[in-house]
Image 1 (tube, rainbow, N blue to C red):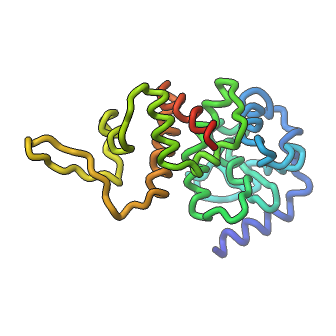
Image 2 (image 1 turned 120 degrees about the horizontal axis):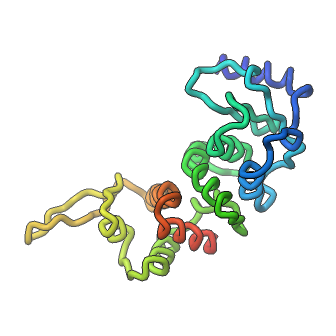
Image 3 (image 1 turned 135 degrees about the horizontal axis):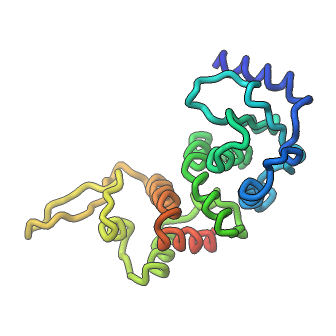
Length: 222
């Protein structure tokens, strides 16, 4: 914690002389589209309110490519312009949701960043924020899967059996005829299952058209 506190003190001290996002030449094209996807429902401050630190302003381990300070409306990237996924990731950290589970922030920042870039490249701006995908129910997911795949899946387990993926909430159970069945482990709550399924669909949306369409369908239920 001490290192983080010191970093924030340094950031706050230099922030006034650093450019705003709207002033940067590279804030155009894909970066502007990413911002537009994430600013739905006014989830983000104006780009002219977001300070962007210079690459040399922050010292941290080499594996860190970006950082964000929500309250100060500050973002930093090791390289500018950053990788589009890194850009989306840090903007997701600027989004504030009252009463949200703190641990979930890194989940959606990490797992939705790629989806946001895919939406931006497809010139799709959803009517609701992508972070609301984690608020859907298992019933919502099943309805979306049935509509997109045109298969009446009876359960989330049946869908994963269909695509040949064994998620962590599934255990294999041998049937009487020697076949293996997908059975849900009881230690996982419905909430955890929704988070996992949305994460899996978001991760696959970039290369699987049906997963991408399922995500778009789910956004209609949010």
